[in-house]
Length: 77
Image (cartoon, rainbow, N blue to C red; front, top):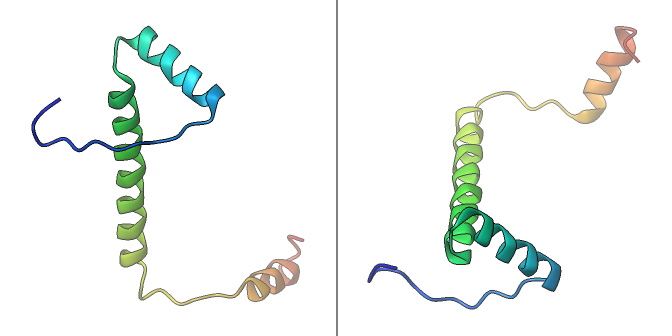
C-alpha cells in the first residue's frame, strides 16, 4: 500500500467476511483491494446518479396519481 492510504476498521458479518476471504484467495487480491474496489464502484454509481438528476432538474414533475390516471384513461390498467 502506498503512503497516501488511510487505515480504517470495518466490521463484517462473519459469513460475509469468510466470503471475502475466499474471493481474495481465488482472485489473488487482498481483502482491502476488494473492499476499496467495491466502495469506489458504489461512489462512482452515486456520482452518475447525481449527474443524471442534475441533467433532469428542469423536467416537469408528474405525480404518481397522475401517472395512474393516465394509464387508466388509456386503458393500459
